[in-house]
Every structure is written in structure tokens, then in C-alpha cells.
Image (cartoon, rainbow, N blue to C red; front, side, top):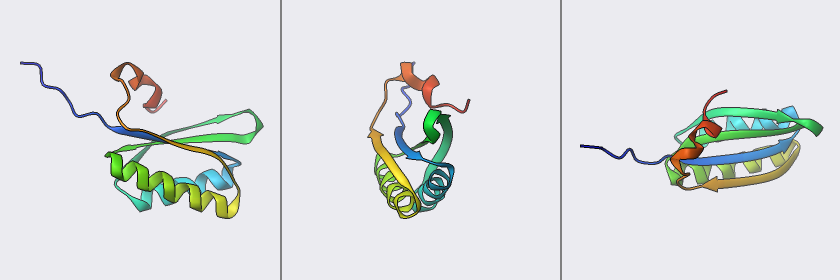
Length: 95
């Protein structure tokens, strides 16, 4: 019998600058039961933090991260994906 695993929600928060990103990640981890699964740094000091967990926890974490990052730097975008397609799993794993 093929059991279906429950899908985990994903939250993404993009900041400009390392300080804002670290502040956001700290707030996200403290605000809800989420796992900070990775971060990516791209040009122009854009940093995206990825968290995973239950939908309500991810929504709370992204909101907390946005507020914390905004207090010390620049928030570019926060976004929650409630149940990403399993084919996208490789995008959210630690890399």
C-alpha cells in the first residue's frame, strides 16, 4: 500500500543584506515550529531564507521574519506556498 506523506508548507523571505537575513531567520525560528531548511545568496546582497513546517506555523514565521528584518534592514518579499508539488522538493532541501 502506498502511503501518502503529508505535504509540508514552505515559506520564503527575501531580504537585502546579511544582517536583515540573520535577524529574520532568528525571528522565524523562534516564532513557530518551523525548520530553517536553507538560505541562498544572490547578487546585490539578496538573501532568501527558506523555512518549512505546517501551514499556520510557516505563515506565522514569515510574518515574524518580515517584521524583524524590516526593523534592521530591507525586506524584498515574503511568500508562503501551502503545499508545493513533490517535484519541487529539490528546491527546498539543504544544498
